[in-house]
Length: 173
Image (cartoon, rainbow, N blue to C red):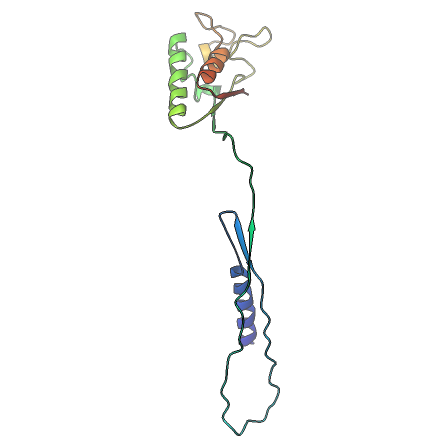
Protein backbone atom coordinates (compact mmCIF):
# COMPACT_ATOMS: atom_id res chain seq x y z
CA UNK A 1 0.00 0.00 0.00
CA UNK A 2 2.87 2.40 0.80
CA UNK A 3 4.40 1.73 -2.61
CA UNK A 4 1.11 2.68 -4.27
CA UNK A 5 0.97 5.96 -2.31
CA UNK A 6 4.56 6.71 -3.30
CA UNK A 7 3.78 6.12 -6.98
CA UNK A 8 0.70 8.36 -6.85
CA UNK A 9 2.58 11.14 -5.05
CA UNK A 10 5.49 10.97 -7.50
CA UNK A 11 3.02 11.18 -10.39
CA UNK A 12 1.42 14.28 -8.88
CA UNK A 13 4.81 15.87 -8.31
CA UNK A 14 5.83 15.10 -11.88
CA UNK A 15 2.68 16.73 -13.23
CA UNK A 16 3.44 19.95 -11.30
CA UNK A 17 6.99 20.13 -12.57
CA UNK A 18 6.20 19.12 -16.16
CA UNK A 19 5.11 22.62 -17.18
CA UNK A 20 6.56 25.96 -16.16
CA UNK A 21 5.52 29.46 -17.13
CA UNK A 22 7.85 32.44 -17.14
CA UNK A 23 7.81 35.78 -18.98
CA UNK A 24 4.98 34.82 -21.36
CA UNK A 25 6.94 31.72 -22.42
CA UNK A 26 5.50 28.32 -21.66
CA UNK A 27 7.76 25.28 -21.68
CA UNK A 28 5.93 21.98 -21.85
CA UNK A 29 7.67 18.63 -21.64
CA UNK A 30 6.35 15.50 -23.26
CA UNK A 31 6.17 12.47 -21.02
CA UNK A 32 8.51 9.55 -21.80
CA UNK A 33 7.38 5.94 -21.71
CA UNK A 34 9.09 3.29 -19.69
CA UNK A 35 10.19 0.70 -22.29
CA UNK A 36 11.30 -2.00 -19.85
CA UNK A 37 9.02 -4.96 -19.37
CA UNK A 38 8.23 -6.19 -15.88
CA UNK A 39 9.97 -9.42 -14.92
CA UNK A 40 7.36 -11.98 -13.94
CA UNK A 41 9.95 -14.78 -13.51
CA UNK A 42 9.86 -15.88 -9.90
CA UNK A 43 12.89 -18.17 -10.09
CA UNK A 44 16.25 -16.76 -9.12
CA UNK A 45 18.97 -16.69 -11.77
CA UNK A 46 22.03 -18.85 -11.21
CA UNK A 47 24.48 -16.40 -12.71
CA UNK A 48 24.97 -12.92 -11.27
CA UNK A 49 22.95 -10.32 -13.10
CA UNK A 50 24.18 -6.80 -13.61
CA UNK A 51 21.26 -4.35 -13.37
CA UNK A 52 21.32 -1.53 -15.89
CA UNK A 53 19.04 1.42 -16.14
CA UNK A 54 17.10 1.79 -19.37
CA UNK A 55 18.38 4.51 -21.66
CA UNK A 56 15.91 7.35 -21.82
CA UNK A 57 16.11 10.48 -23.88
CA UNK A 58 15.54 13.78 -22.14
CA UNK A 59 12.03 15.14 -22.58
CA UNK A 60 11.57 17.38 -25.56
CA UNK A 61 10.68 20.99 -24.78
CA UNK A 62 8.19 22.95 -26.76
CA UNK A 63 8.28 26.73 -26.48
CA UNK A 64 5.06 28.69 -26.88
CA UNK A 65 5.32 32.45 -27.26
CA UNK A 66 2.51 34.92 -26.96
CA UNK A 67 2.24 38.25 -28.69
CA UNK A 68 0.54 40.82 -26.51
CA UNK A 69 -0.59 44.14 -27.92
CA UNK A 70 1.62 47.10 -27.14
CA UNK A 71 0.19 49.31 -24.42
CA UNK A 72 0.16 52.89 -25.62
CA UNK A 73 -0.82 54.29 -22.23
CA UNK A 74 -1.71 52.80 -18.88
CA UNK A 75 -4.70 54.05 -16.92
CA UNK A 76 -3.48 55.19 -13.51
CA UNK A 77 -6.35 57.06 -11.92
CA UNK A 78 -7.47 58.18 -8.51
CA UNK A 79 -11.00 58.60 -7.17
CA UNK A 80 -11.60 61.94 -5.45
CA UNK A 81 -14.50 61.56 -3.02
CA UNK A 82 -16.49 64.61 -1.98
CA UNK A 83 -19.13 63.01 0.24
CA UNK A 84 -18.61 63.85 3.91
CA UNK A 85 -15.56 65.89 2.83
CA UNK A 86 -13.49 62.69 2.56
CA UNK A 87 -10.97 64.00 -0.01
CA UNK A 88 -12.10 67.32 -1.42
CA UNK A 89 -12.91 69.82 -0.10
CA UNK A 90 -11.40 68.86 3.24
CA UNK A 91 -13.97 71.05 5.05
CA UNK A 92 -17.28 72.57 4.03
CA UNK A 93 -16.35 76.10 5.09
CA UNK A 94 -13.30 76.75 2.87
CA UNK A 95 -13.13 79.83 0.69
CA UNK A 96 -13.09 79.43 -3.09
CA UNK A 97 -9.35 80.15 -3.18
CA UNK A 98 -8.71 77.54 -0.48
CA UNK A 99 -10.81 74.98 -2.39
CA UNK A 100 -8.86 75.64 -5.58
CA UNK A 101 -5.53 75.46 -3.73
CA UNK A 102 -6.48 72.10 -2.20
CA UNK A 103 -7.51 70.76 -5.59
CA UNK A 104 -4.26 71.88 -7.24
CA UNK A 105 -2.19 70.39 -4.39
CA UNK A 106 -4.02 67.05 -4.72
CA UNK A 107 -3.49 66.98 -8.48
CA UNK A 108 0.19 67.89 -8.07
CA UNK A 109 0.69 65.02 -5.61
CA UNK A 110 -1.01 62.62 -8.01
CA UNK A 111 1.12 63.89 -10.89
CA UNK A 112 4.31 63.42 -8.83
CA UNK A 113 3.22 59.81 -8.29
CA UNK A 114 2.69 59.16 -12.03
CA UNK A 115 -1.11 59.21 -12.12
CA UNK A 116 -2.70 60.21 -15.42
CA UNK A 117 -6.42 60.29 -14.68
CA UNK A 118 -8.79 61.56 -12.05
CA UNK A 119 -12.32 60.40 -11.25
CA UNK A 120 -14.20 63.12 -9.44
CA UNK A 121 -17.37 62.61 -7.39
CA UNK A 122 -19.74 65.40 -8.43
CA UNK A 123 -23.01 64.18 -6.85
CA UNK A 124 -22.15 63.31 -3.24
CA UNK A 125 -25.61 63.29 -1.63
CA UNK A 126 -28.48 64.10 -4.03
CA UNK A 127 -26.80 67.46 -4.61
CA UNK A 128 -24.16 68.76 -7.01
CA UNK A 129 -20.65 70.17 -7.17
CA UNK A 130 -21.45 71.97 -10.42
CA UNK A 131 -23.84 74.62 -11.63
CA UNK A 132 -27.26 73.01 -12.12
CA UNK A 133 -30.83 74.16 -12.60
CA UNK A 134 -32.08 70.80 -11.32
CA UNK A 135 -29.88 69.83 -8.35
CA UNK A 136 -28.98 72.08 -5.38
CA UNK A 137 -25.39 73.03 -4.55
CA UNK A 138 -23.75 70.49 -2.26
CA UNK A 139 -23.69 70.89 1.50
CA UNK A 140 -20.13 69.53 1.46
CA UNK A 141 -18.98 72.48 -0.65
CA UNK A 142 -20.38 75.44 1.31
CA UNK A 143 -21.84 74.00 4.52
CA UNK A 144 -25.38 74.76 3.39
CA UNK A 145 -27.44 72.82 0.85
CA UNK A 146 -28.34 75.02 -2.14
CA UNK A 147 -25.83 77.77 -1.30
CA UNK A 148 -23.45 78.52 -4.16
CA UNK A 149 -19.78 79.23 -3.52
CA UNK A 150 -18.80 82.88 -3.30
CA UNK A 151 -17.42 84.19 -5.54
CA UNK A 152 -19.38 81.87 -7.80
CA UNK A 153 -17.41 79.30 -9.79
CA UNK A 154 -18.04 75.82 -11.15
CA UNK A 155 -15.89 73.30 -9.22
CA UNK A 156 -16.49 70.60 -11.85
CA UNK A 157 -15.20 72.83 -14.65
CA UNK A 158 -12.23 73.85 -12.50
CA UNK A 159 -11.25 70.17 -11.96
CA UNK A 160 -11.69 69.41 -15.66
CA UNK A 161 -9.46 72.34 -16.66
CA UNK A 162 -6.76 71.44 -14.13
CA UNK A 163 -6.73 67.77 -15.18
CA UNK A 164 -6.51 68.70 -18.85
CA UNK A 165 -3.62 71.12 -18.13
CA UNK A 166 -1.70 68.01 -17.02
CA UNK A 167 -2.72 66.01 -20.10
CA UNK A 168 -4.92 63.70 -18.03
CA UNK A 169 -8.21 61.94 -18.54
CA UNK A 170 -11.06 63.24 -16.42
CA UNK A 171 -14.18 61.36 -15.38
CA UNK A 172 -16.98 62.34 -13.09
CA UNK A 173 -19.17 60.08 -11.09
